[in-house]
Image (cartoon, rainbow, N blue to C red):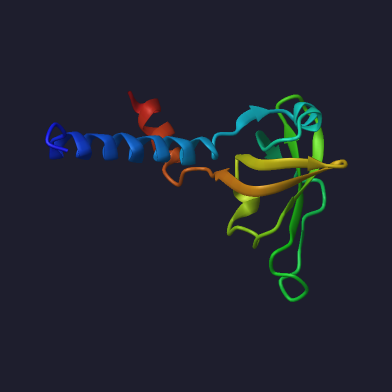
Length: 133
């Protein structure tokens, strides 16, 4: 062990930690897809769309606080029911865009996570400033 210095051991440990971090981060990488594409693969994907406000949303926390269903229209215009096993997010109806991550199960998209793009409270002010210029 005379030939191996402490710096070499530390370097090897750092490389091992970096590989472990990259491996764990790669599990979260999902590709973007439409509902039709999600129906063809058996892995987690991200679908970007908008809330179908004319369709039913169901959330009854007294019955099951971890069941929320709603409809999303993807970029191709296809509407699908989405089930999220979590609470309904606050101001969900105000979202401009929704990203759901999950898998198709029969004709329903079962989401493991949800991201919302909500309108900015400063949007009107930005428009007003641009009009004055």
